[in-house]
Length: 100
Image (cartoon, rainbow, N blue to C red):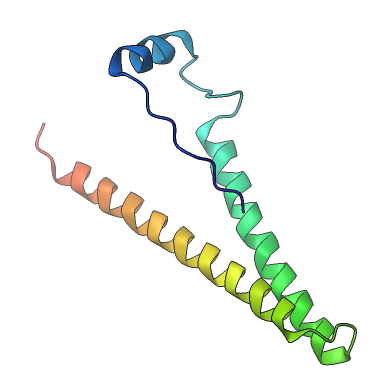
């Protein structure tokens, strides 16, 4: 999973960019597509870790560190996904508590 650096820009430039970009897409992809891509990447990491474990068991690979690294990548990605989910649910619950 690739992590892109965050670039900070003045608030005025952000507002101008938000007005220029369509509401449904940022960089050509909508929120749903970005979420789908991220979940697909987490799934791929889980499948790679499982395959590496099977390959170690069958003797196709000898280096146990490859399996440990693949497993840790999958674990960290899943933990991050769960934390993001928890924050989204928490934000949704907070909005539901707001009085209009």
